Image (tube, rainbow, N blue to C red; front, side, top):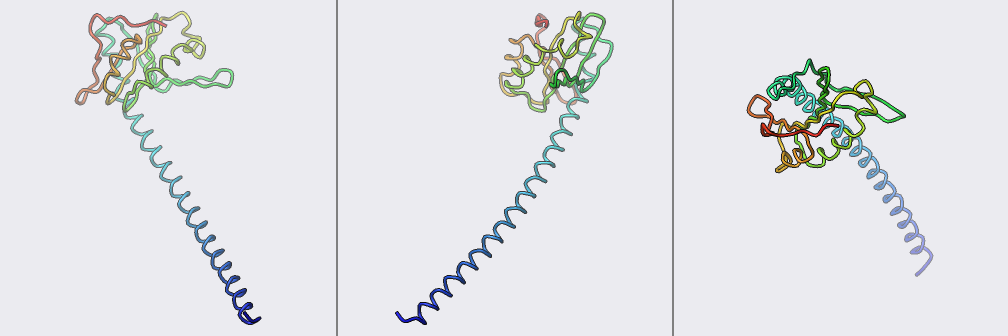
Amino acid sequence: MDVQEQELNAQDIWELFRETNRMFQETDRKLIKLSENLENTRKEVGRVTDSLGRFAESMVSPAVVRLFAKRDIVLEGTTQRARRRRNGRGMEFDVLAVNRVSVVAVEVKTTLRADDVAEFVKKLEDFKTFFPEYRDYEVLGAVAGMSLQEGVDKYAERQGLYVLAQSGDAVQMLNDEDFEARVW
């Protein structure tokens, strides 16, 4: 191999390096653009999910007073998205309904799953810490879903929770008349 062939080979190699570098830069630009698109999609999905959640809450909130009245628990009104902060921690309940002795805390999901029920029961354990104005009240829990994972209604009942679900264009209580709720 003579010197000219070696120089051509070296030049060819440098050209390949430059071309590879250009391709990497183009790939980086495409990955950045893809990442931006994914972030925008995530934000849009979040907005849609939040809108569905608010819609579900707006369906459940007025039904709570009516449904609990049928169980001889007369509630005076509801509050949506009740939030509190304590010691750097936050807690939110989708719907709170009260009378002079009871407060009903409701967790609303578009699709109610067993893990939602388990998390809600844990939240109820801390309810009076975050809402001390209700420390002398009996706290009842309810979960509501526009749709329910199979068997979640029975699981929630075993946890002592009232179960609300969409039925056509209304919300109904799924618990039997003789259901005895857990009091927190």
